[in-house]
Image (cartoon, rainbow over all chains, first blue to last red; front, side, top):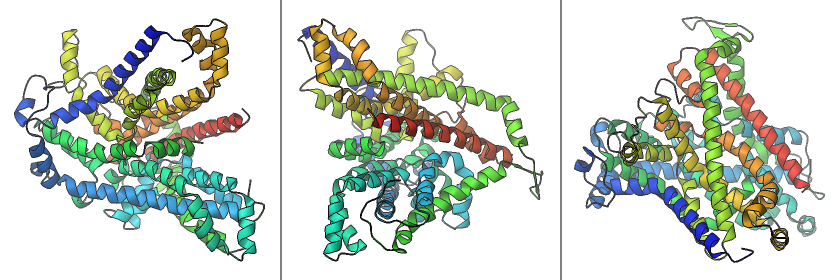
Length: 282
Length: 294
């Protein structure tokens, strides 16, 4: 603030508080719904104060789910989401850091071709090649499996670029010193480059974990067995029945549980998250 | 392309390091994309026994199909509405946070978390608030004499998905605007203040123009987001309805392919979308190259 204008400061706070409230309101409504009993959703408008059924709703959802509609319990679905998010995050980081290392520290025929092949993946989001990709996965027998949920999504141009960018800033003297001391490429990678990349890896991990957890279309396509449902796609299956049979309290408990893990990750790792977000877009 | 001055002499190792990434890229990205491209030039007979090469006929039919053109129009309106709404709210928030000295950090924390909410979940949240029978917002709107029902009213349905999509994107835009604002030299603002420019004049003549690289970058990113990443929002809520009024292009590829009526046409739609992503990506990267000279 350049000059002191109390009224403007007041206006600024007012705008921000309004903004924060508007942003938080949908989640507040969902949370309230998840604490009420079924009877509150039969008619009229939904209440805006918490009710007494919180524990009951959440434990029903976690342990048995909406059984009458064949939806599995939430706990195993959350476990599937966790497996998927972790495999995608770790897989993407692992293969990207290796390819960035190859591109920056070696000179070999077809280096440019490899770089462009990776770059092109940026231009081919799942949404535009849904059915041919589905066919490939089906032919490989990867439907209804953790491998099918994660492997097709772990190629990553952005992660490769991020590591490439970072490796280019690592001083050449380090490589020279390592070579003089007789370290081979793998030893250099493991003992010098990997420890130096720690912060970048962590920042990327936060972003990619959220990306993996929030996948929707892909699990929807390749899982038909409820055993492999992830929570984000599972919610849709519960929400469609809510129109006919308004068990909103249960649906909203599931919504809160689906949103909680990634939101907690952001709140507790805000610095890494912002770093990861801003740097992957460069 | 840049590489290190000092490199390792191994001939075989780099291929080994690249192998996993390239393998996945080829099997799950390039091959399916090639398949889509090839199928888009074919037409299957009614029983799926043989297909004939028909050149661009699938594309010509596509662009003569009123349902497809309608979907193009809806996509444009949707993308524009989401981008403008989300970016203007985020800019307002970012400017406000940037002008505060102490409490900015707390507001930032309170504004960034929606980034973590899955698009499908964001859709369900708004869908619930707008539920015509028990939702809180239709109840309030009824007080103004507005009868809300996104199940039958096309405009209501479109507003619903726009709000959900824009809500989800606020944190992202906010963070980039804030980073952009913080990189504007403070001395410029102070100089303008000494010359007698008030806060609004300073924003209009100094801050906003200097922010234009960020604004342009976010414009492209938001259009890409609205066109491709909002599939989950639409699928989880309106399912493209009522009567196709929220069927954006990405959703149409899915819906048409799911019915499996015309593989050639579905593939042609995929190829059109790929072309759009390619153009947007090129614009985005050219901009980044120019930004380096700043």
